[in-house]
Length: 376
Image 1 (cartoon, helix red, strand yellow):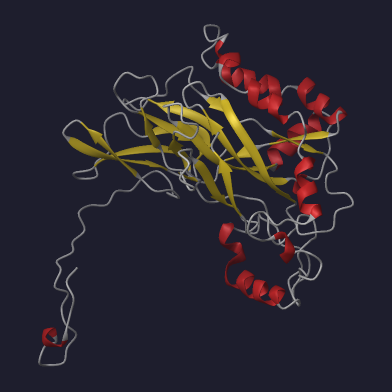
Image 2 (cartoon, one colour):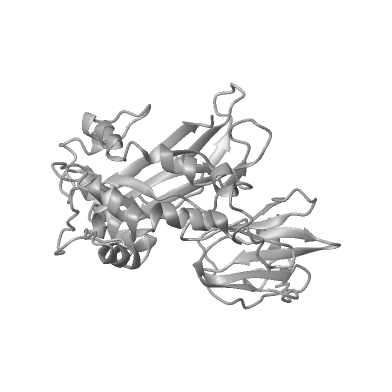
């Protein structure tokens, strides 16, 4: 980068001109707002700019001039995207496909022609949470936040992830002095510390996730979903519906005192060989919460609940080819009413942190924690 010095200042005292000639190469209008980083892919002798829009579209633009490539964009009827597309040779034919993860945690594969590959779609498991997990708890996970000078509670749907902006920062400073809406003397600050220095209450909160969640991981993908591949175009999605959306499954969970909380992906996943088997894994930071449509569907099945009581975050590692879950870890659990809620807005990072030859997964959450998980 060129630097300006006193000798570059014109004699007339006017502001010096920039020594670099920076010009706009091109710009292109796409179908919707873009919330994630575009991806650059090699396409023949040129390059392509691939972008997922917040609502509906996957766009492919010529890297040379920004013109839309033939056959694009691909339009989804309902999907939205917070994450960037990923490039992976899913079918091992020597050509990269486009791996997409939607806001609703659906994994979709698009071919080089911009059309979906049938039979490859899958969806992340829902999270089983004890229905009345919040009863009797009075800590950072459940206590409503009150803003000084404001009535009522702060909810996630008050705008955007930035809704806690400048005012939220000021409140955080007040809390540090013990005068904000969340006291520090009762163990809130004690939840935070190196090496997982959690209070007994925080440690106990991990048991609030249903014990049989591992069964969902085993049944959500892989061989169990491949058996009926010839019967329908999307057997993995059909199996997911049977596990989580069917009336029998919903009522059975309710009878067991559990709630099936929807998975959502708000950050770009990471492709890395986490377990050292020589194959790339899909590492996802997942936010679990219930939206109005899901709450209404549960009510139609006779399950009535307060959807704002269930917000969770975790990490899920998936085989991107089979759609099967290799492992998952559930990290934070809160309500919508707390100052810090368990959403995860950042991508997981994968590296060998301790030099032992095995990978670790690091992820930060909106609760103010950084978790490091063993990859195997």
